[in-house]
Every structure is written in structure tokens, then in C-alpha cells.
Image 1 (cartoon, protein in one colour):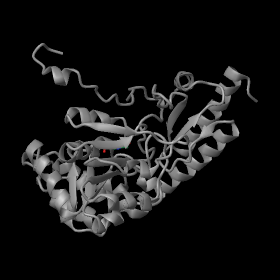
Image 2: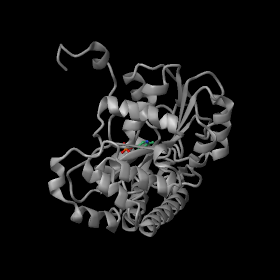
Image 3: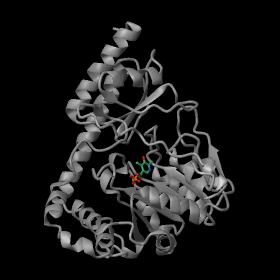
Image 4: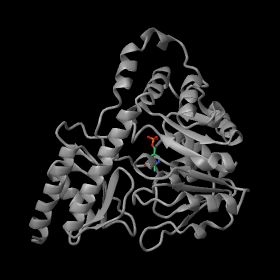
Length: 356
Ligand SMILES: *Cc1c(COP(=O)(O)O)cnc(C)c1O
């Protein structure tokens, strides 16, 4: 860093993204991307896109895309804001509502503490219980914002919407943000709460279930007043943060719901297969409802397992963090990836521990 950088910024921790190796032959199961391509309707929209249009700024309101998202979720366009990836929205949420203190779990998406620090808002982490579950009553204390990923990352565990509702009802003087990056692999969305509760904001991404991580598109749904807050911050930062091309692709992705649902259900069945296979090998496996599995070997440390897999061409994620350092997080790949993974883990267990 230069000597000119604000010391407060210099001291910020940076989010460390999972590796994006250039290697062609690696099986990449470390950043929860989709193993399947975006919908054919996205390919068609891309082919039809008029390159000449890039000369002009995009629609800063993303009106057509927001209307399509609203229609998809049976809301109004006023209830939707879009940004460049959902990380942008989460950052705005910390900035907008965090001043009176933020609560989030001790084990969750690593970006939350970074957003808090970057926006200079105080935060407190709330420990998950011994089974990595969120105990909702622990959040019934003073704060101006609660952020919950549901399903949570990297545990994959989901809490019922009734728990989120209890939190929303507990105090109308704070905002409850629900990060639903993985909800399409889970069960119950909190979207139904956004009409009844003016303090609930649901954050979604195109990066995981919609196979558009590289396009960068996220959105939030909430009561109009919360959406207007986020729009204001977006307009104070970069009103053009969703390009005209991405606006078109985002809308196209919603057209082909059969394709979308089919991809999600294939990922869910591979996930269940992988959970069962790891359990059979003696692993501790959380009941993930996301597009990844979070698991602990009976004998091999998390770090060693991640390293052994990497040497065999499979990239997974390990977090050197208290309570979870024995675990690895494995994204769900294609059916073929899953088979190779299961076989390779079996071999590693045999070699390192002599387990049969
Ligand atoms: C991947 C992820 C996101 C967001 O990703 P974007 O690509 O910025 O939309 C948000 N929250 C969680 C918990 C995630 O895992």
C-alpha cells in the first residue's frame, strides 16, 4: 500500500475469494458456482444483443429487469432493486442500517465482518450452537440490523421462516436482512414476509442457482421504503452498476423456469448422494440445504484433506477458523464430478488412515 492510503483503510481485512485457477482439468468445487451452463434463453439473449447499444449508458433504473424479477416473485417493481452481485446490496445494507450495531452468527459468510468494518459500523457475532444451528432467541437483543444467511454458509443449515418472522416481530425498530444466496436449493423463502413486515429485506443472487456468477447480478426484495434506501445508496455510488448486457441476460434467465428448476433439482440430488456417501465413510456431515456439503473427516484434518484433494485435481474450500477448521466445504459439481469426488475421497481415507 502507498503511504497516502487512509490508515483506517490500510488496516481493513480483505475478503479472500476462493481460487479461480487457470488450469483446465481441475474439478472446481470451491466457490459454489453452478456446474451447469446458464439457461438456453440466456444464450439466445446474448446472441440477439445489439452491440451498438453499448455506446449508450444502461438504464440506471433497470426497469425492465426489475419488472421481470417482480413478476417472477409476484411483487411490484417498486419492491425490487438490482446491483452488481448481491455483495453490493449487502454492503449497502450494512451502511444503511448498521449504525446502531449489527448482529450476525459467528460462523457465516466471511464478508459480513468486512462490510461492517469498511462501513465503520459496530457488530457483534452470535455463536451458533454446538450443532452449528442458529438459535433465534439469541438475537433478541439490542441492535439496528440483523443479517442472517439462510441457508447459512458454510454450514448449509436452514432455519424455518417462522424463526425469521419471530425476529421481525420482536422489534420493528431494526432491519432483518435475509441473505438467500442458496435458497433455491433449500425449502422456504422469507419473501412471504416482506409484505407483512416493513423491516425485512431479502437478498438474492444470480451467481449460484442461476449459473451467472461472472455476470455479476444480485437483487433485493422488500417494502418500498427499504428498497428506496438501497436505491439511494446505489445512486450515491454508481447508478450504472448493472450493465445493459447483464440487464438483458438477467431477464432472459427468468424465462425458462423448467430449465432452472431441473438444474436445481439435479444439484440437490447430487448433494444428497454426496452426503450419504460421506456419512458412509464415517464423516460428520451437516444437513446442508445449499449447493455445497460441509463435512469433517473422521481422521484427516480439514487442511490436509483439502490439500490431498487439490493434489488429485479437485479444489474444495477450507476455512482456517475456530470451530470449523476440521471441516471442508465442497460445492456440488456435475454428476460425474460427484462420482470422481466420492471415489477420490475414499482413496485418500484409505491411504492416510487405512480406513476400509
Ligand atoms: C455467494 C454468496 C453471496 C453473493 O454473491 P454475489 O456473487 O456477490 O451475488 C452472498 N452471500 C452468500 C452467503 C454467498 O455465499
